[in-house]
Length: 364
Ligand code: GDP
Picture 1 (cartoon, rainbow, N blue to C red):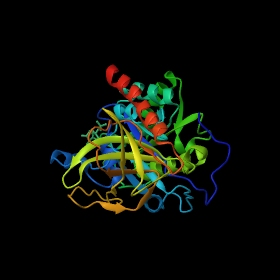
Picture 2: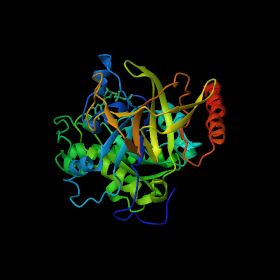
Picture 3: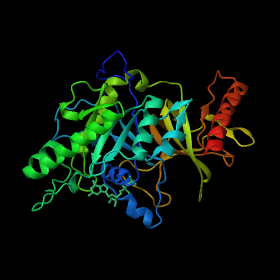
Picture 4: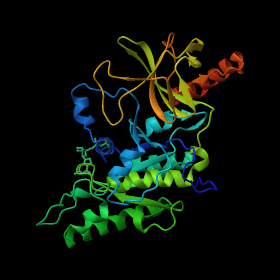
């Protein structure tokens, strides 16, 4: 387990943790993301609407509000939480930053009715390989029903409150499933426990029961994610002036030309910064023309509704416009040229990513 020595203190200069959602197909990864976002991407996608930027940013204030019922005194030392929009292990494997995983923490979604499935095990192996901490979302609790009563919906309620509203029969079913699934994790060599009973997080992985349809357990999940990250990853989350930034996608956008969607993992980007990215035909040296993001907590998919920024601090998903980005290779790092940097060295560093990206493409 990753663990830094110092507990987080108020006023510490931390960046937002980056979270990835993993798990078997149909366990509710997309729905869970929608639910924590409070939007409905699934239906949107059906109508041809797509995400504009590869991640959703949740300001700490928003998390505080939504978790009020759970813990009024929640101390959040990070500015927010950044959740990667594409669930699944492709994005987890491809999203790298300086050779290591881009995600600081993950949500592993398990369907309470199905338990561990083949892609759950694959996800587990990837998480172990990258040494990435994760929290289990035991999803679809609302599918627990007894013969006479269905699940009583308690929209967006903390899970213990919601569970207390259920019949004894539903609670018994829940406990039965939970026991079974903890056994399955044990077979994979992992101790798990309901998060509010977990006295040794780090050794024992926490389980948060959730419903991505009606939102039970979502406050618990959000709070646990942020608090766990800020408590155990202080070193990793400490804000640095060294820019760490990964290109997610290269896209042509009307009125902007070829743009790149990036995740700024650490540091700050400014309009006018000279940057170097890895291109198919060699390093691309260019200048940031605009730094764009959608409005916080809103899905702005209407053209021309980006927010422009003079500068952006990590961690954020950002769209960058600049000249000459056409042949940028997704999955590589963006480098900023500082006043004392040697451009040739940076160009070389930028092209080093090419090898690892190409070897991943070969394998897939
Ligand atoms: P993904 O493949 O893991 O992204 O799964 P989806 O988010 O697409 O969900 C698969 C199906 O399960 C969809 O029909 C969802 O509506 C349904 N689903 C997801 N979460 C829940 C939940 O918490 N409760 C119930 N009852 N259904 C869910």
